[in-house]
Every structure is written in C-alpha cells, then in structure tokens.
Length: 182
Ligand code: ATP
Ligand code: MG
Image (tube, rainbow, N blue to C red; front, side, top):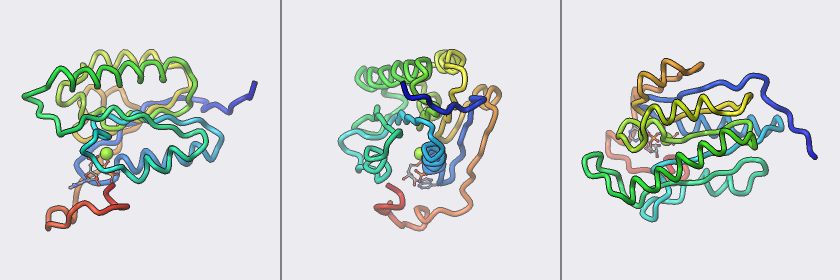
C-alpha cells in the first residue's frame, strides 16, 4: 500500500468573477499539488460536449500521473430558461460523481470546474452542493470555479478569489485562440 502525503487541512476555495483565469488557476494549483505528491481530480461541468473544442489542458492532464479529469459537458450552450431532461441528467451524473470523489478520499485536491455556473443557472441545487462539501473526507481540498458564485458559497468558503475583467481581447473582436483560450 502506497502511503500518500495528505494535505493537513482541506479547505474550500472559490475562484469566481468575469475575468479570465479561473480554470487555468485551478489547473495551476493542481500541477503544484501533483508536484508535491498529492492526487488531483477535476470534474468539469458544462464543457466537453461534442460541439466544444478539445481544451489543451484536458489533453495534457490525461497524460499526467496523479492528475485526472472527467467532463460532464453538454453539446450546446445551456439556455437557463430551457433546460432539457438530457441537460439535467448529465449534470446530475456529474454531481453524483463529485460526491463520490469527495467522500471516498482517493484524491487530495478536487476541482469542480464551472460548478458556480451550474448553481447559478439552477442545474444543481445549492443545498445539495453544500451537503456534499460538508460530507467530504477530512483533508480534501476543493476548488469551485466559475463566474457568478452564489453568496452562500462565498460565505462558507475559506478562500475566495474574484477575478475581475479589466480588459479582454474578446471585446475588441479577437476570437478565442487555440492554446490561449482553449
Ligand atoms: P480560463 O479557462 O482561460 O482560465 P476562465 O475559466 O476564467 O478562463 P470561463 O468563464 O470559464 O473563464 O470562460 C470560458 C472561456 O472564455 C475561456 O476560453 C476563457 O479564456 C474565455 N474568457 C474568460 N474570460 C473572458 C471574458 N471576460 N471575455 C471573453 N472571454 C473570456
Ligand atoms: Mg473556466
């Protein structure tokens, strides 16, 4: 049995705001953690459906030891006013998987990418997510990313970074660039 170094204290981090850098910050943290012998798992909501580009980071993470990723993406942008049964089903699967990953203690750092958006548009219920955070195994650090983090989540978090857009090339018409935006 391999003994793993554990984080002494597992805290809750939230990366939110409308500026660029939430997902990449979470992945950067994941790389730091792996470098110190921790095991990292990322559950990415909303992205990864057939119509989305393959994100560069996903391709790489799949080749890294002790850093894994699962996507629960939808093949289209979700219209919060028209949530389909399929949309709901895939998110429910992701939430269920998140609970498993947080409670079984197989990972030291768990990234729930875009979960803030999932909560904001009502695809997951806040009490459900709060409960699974509470149920997580001792020592598990969790990062929740996505713009528009709910206040209740901010209230219970130990660390909150708000990334504000000061400038983004998108506003002057520069399209998403391979290797930079995806
Ligand atoms: P990144 O994945 O680059 O760290 P992010 O996670 O902070 O960005 P998201 O809200 O997940 O940003 O945005 C999804 C996509 O939109 C990413 O490709 C991201 O680079 C890009 N993006 C982020 N912020 C902005 C913005 N203010 N305007 C336009 N596009 C943005
Ligand atoms: Mg993101």
